[in-house]
Length: 131
Image (cartoon, rainbow, N blue to C red; front, side):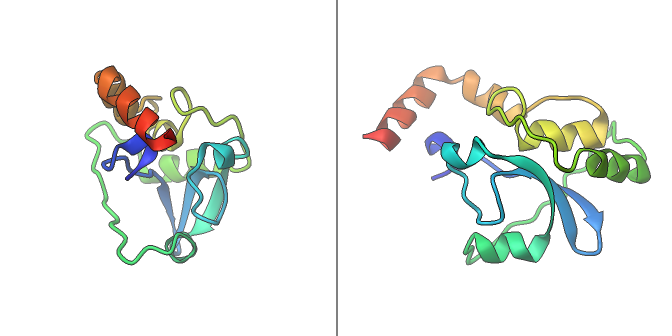
């Protein structure tokens, strides 16, 4: 299961060319635990390094078009300008917030909104993961 028991949670990144992405991550180990997120930073890494280090048998990479997307050069410039930044927060500043800010200039996370719209299920799955 994904974060907090939600299997549909997805990691977001910005492709900057030459097989590299910029993303908010806890490290190159593919560790998605909350402990790893305490030390998360925006990093520039190889797409293949992330796939290899996460030990993923199958990796789904999906390009999501945004109708309100900025110019590609602006998107890449925004992503690269944030490399090294810290301050990960699951609800307010996660990988989706970062990627959408790069692409559209808007800071939002549809995944967070979806979880918060189902608080009872969110709490039940979180408790099940802990117990």
